[in-house]
Length: 131
Image (cartoon, rainbow, N blue to C red; front, side, top):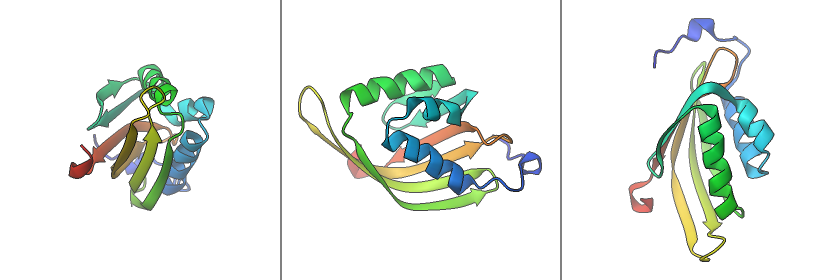
């Protein structure tokens, strides 16, 4: 995806955008999560593959949190990569609501924003030991 940083709002902070998105996830504020995404966004994850479109992404979020509603996540590091790209190193723990199985994951996430500050792409890479 080309980086059209010349179109970016110079006051936009991709780290703040990423933190806002993660804060909404932490409290399961689905309306705010949905508002973070552009309509044609895509989400690519080692764990789930590729999801295209805000509606499909939100369906996946709702399904996941119906099973792992107790998820606790933490960003260990967050950085700006470019005027519209932020990166995080994360770790999470959750319990499967039916089986009680523990989920422990960690990895890296890169989030790309459009000129309006909406997420257009999320790339999640799990650490090899977590896959």
